[in-house]
Length: 394
Image 1 (tube, rainbow, N blue to C red):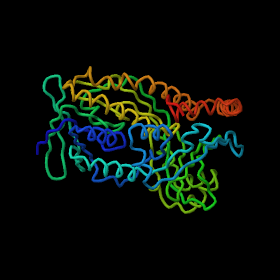
Image 2: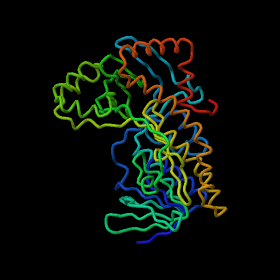
Image 3: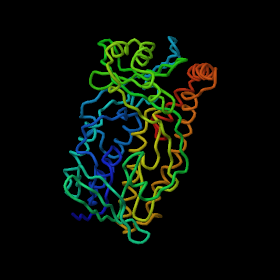
Image 4: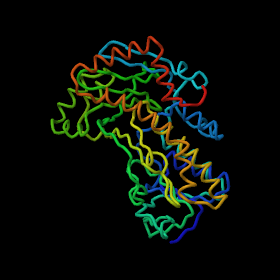
C-alpha cells in the first residue's frame, strides 16, 4: 500500500498528536503512524505541569483537554525521613494555574484524536510499525512501515519523528546525540489510595532509597522507587522477600501493597535519561519531543516540554509547507526556537540527578539542608517555577 501526504508523523504520543491536530487545523494533509493497536496501555508521563496548560491555552486546546476526566494536584511536599523539609502550594509557583493535572494518557490522546478526526486532512493508522526512512539523494521522502496485514510506504514532503526516546526515525536517519546522561532508574508501581489521602505530590529522601508518591486518577497512588541504573535487576536477584522488606521500610501507604506482593509483575522500570540530539532536522525530516530532547523524570515536565516543541513545530512546518521549502534549514527553526530552554531545563535536571543518584557519603544530608534553606529564602519556588512554568508569564 502506498500513501501520499504533506506530513507523516511517526508516533501518536502527546507531541505527535498535538502536532497532527494543529497541522490538520491549518488544512495540511497529515498522516500519523502509531505502532500500537490503540491508546489503551500503561504510561508513566501522566502528570501535566502548568507549562502544559499554558501551551494548551496558547493553541486553543485547553477546553478540549479540561473537559476530560482528570485530577488536580494542589501541592508538593518533600520529606527527609519523618521531617517535612519543604511544603509548597502550586498556587505559589503559578497563581494563574494553581495546580498540576493528572490525566491518564489514553484519555488525553483519545481527546486529541477525537478532535483531530473532525478535520478531513487528518488520518491515523494504528498498528503501523515504521521500519526505515526512505530517501531520494540527501532528502528524506517518507517511511517504509509494516501493518498487521501488509507493507506500507508513505511518501511525504516532511517526515516527523515523534516516536520517543528510542526513536526509529532518529536511528534510521542517523541523527547523533550531542550529550546524554543516565544514572538512575525509577521503579514504578501503583497502590490503592486510602480515603484520607489528599492530592499532594510527595517525595521522600532516606539513606536507603528515595521515593515518589503521587495521587493517580481516579483513586490510586503511583509510587516510584529511585534506584541506581540497573538496580531493579539487583533487587530481583535478591528475591521477593527482600523487595517486600524494602517497601515495608518506606511510607505506610505502601505497606498493604508490600504485604500482598506475590511476584515482580506489578513493577515497571523507567530509565531516567537526559538526551539532546545535536541537529534535529534533515532535508525533509524533523525530530520533536523525546526523539529530539529527552528529559529526566525530575519535575515531571517531560510531556509538557515535548508538547511545547510540537507547538513550535506546527508553526514552522505550516510555514514550510506553504513556502514549499522542506529543507533542513527551514525545519531547523524549531531547534532555534526551543534548544536554549531545553538545555537550561537539562542543566537543572542534571543538578537534581546528582543528588538523587549520588553515592558520595553525606552529600544527601548537605543537599537536604540546602533545600531547606532555599525554601525559607523563596529560592525553591523560583526553581520550581522555572521547571514547571517556563519562560511564560504566570
